[in-house]
Length: 427
Image (tube, rainbow, N blue to C red):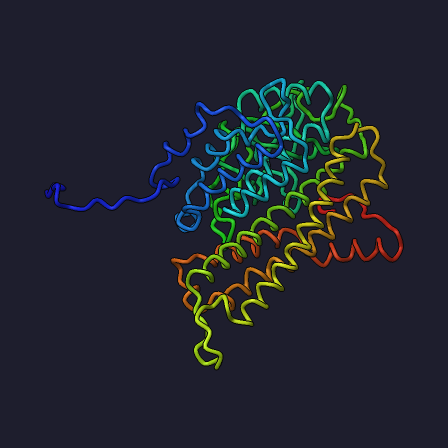
């Protein structure tokens, strides 16, 4: 067996989550947490820089993202919405959505995981009682817990049976984002013999929750979105979110889960598109050559008229999308943080339409960007080592979550008739 000698050269690689995870995971060990919105966005950018270094390699490996989630935890991003009294940052939603966007620029999978975590962490505020809100927020914030959810509406509902003072969940879900890397899972099902839906938050690591680890799709490969089996998972009736004496207490605010989640989607898509354009333009500056038969003697790709025109068109669309989504995020942040009793069905519907409009624009423009960049970077940029494919794969995969024509329909109906969308699992 040969040994390395002094004359041999050791090749050093930059630290990454693959080559030096501990070095990166511990970097904030003795660093104070940010105290301003801008500071938290800077912290998110630090995390994004780490994720970007080996995003393509980790995507290709398709391993459960334990280190990535631990990175989010150690950076303090997991408790960004949590109460300050329990060590959270207590950030508003419009800032939290920007954090999702920043992370998604570097790694769409991890941006999705974090965005879903935020929505599920807020779920107790959407449907829970005041006592449940206080208990859950203290639990997840003090323990730095990460959320996932087994709430795919297009599958059959989980069945819930009463057993004295307990509720027992059973069933199967095709998708459960977060899966094996979560600490807490949101379950939703229907009480047997009724049409009553019940949400509950349970520990992810228990015998009755079996994550299959079978997520192997075109894009968003590290989201742990595979199937899950729920077998005799028990909670006390007191853990049924929003129920008092076994009766649900409805509010219009309860239905903000869908526009809230769809607003998160908008920022995942915007981040992916921004990452695609930034990566492509960096490649063009460094590598793309001028077309030698143009007759104008250009030396660099950045001098080519069609390349400048292409980037100008794509950037203009992306900047417009960002401005729209920023404004929408302010609107939905306002209603999410307002007293729950104040939200009207009309205001909820208006916000849902605005979120839908943002989704229409960023999906169509984002997919154009993720495809068009190949024309602007050149044939050599299609090499697997460059990894530009990750942006189109990620955006194409997640944007299939629900049909975009239905979002256009919601917006069009509102413009023509003033009608707001009826709250459903997707509107």
